[in-house]
Length: 269
Ligand SMILES: O=C(O)CCC(=O)C(=O)O
Image (cartoon, rainbow, N blue to C red; front, side):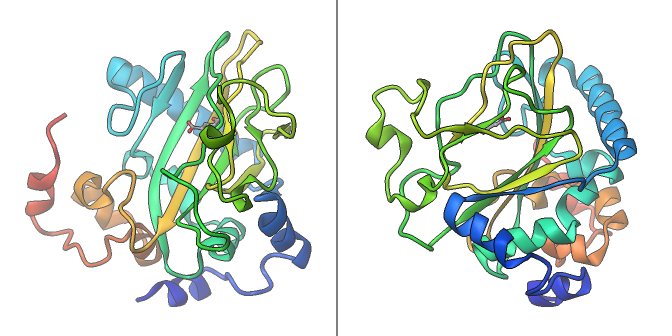
């Protein structure tokens, strides 16, 4: 099954997004999808992420990246069936398709909680250099698991910066400083913000007493390397429970889940 068929089967078509939604992605580089999660789903995600971070302790996030002052978790598709929603929601996929075309796949599914007093990042894109207008390789989404406020470090973005043909480091002597055009993604828990990942963005300092929690469901063009190689990291039990649509989106549909080789391919933890 190819991606065009998968998208059709999941109900994604040219009308899933409005003209205004598509214009927001083209011009500003991001789109808010409100109420993509119910409050019950948000609570279930938070509960499971808390459990995982307790189990993994100091190893949490190691598969991809650890960051001082944050709790990061990675390889979430493998860790609980509830996270499959983050890679198959039709409105999310329609937005990713608008940025990358039909031929995309999951790059990774991670979570990031900015702890009180931490979380500020430099402005960056999720790609090494500047790209030509319209030639995009990556698209990301932030799943708000707490309300994002100015005080708790809602992500900042520079609208339109994905179109400028430069990186933040090209024009800023210190990417951690404020940019005159930055705006923060303020929103309620349950919202998902999809963004062209060539857009300059970054976490902000959490000035409150509670963690600012989010998941990042990240996609790349099908001809690119995934941030987390799903063929190496998905266990055979996981492959056995995933839908065929999810396996195509993860680019593991041709992996034989009965094969012992999958276990052997897993790097040591
Ligand atoms: O969580 C956020 O606010 C943004 C995180 C981010 O951009 C990153 O970790 O690269």
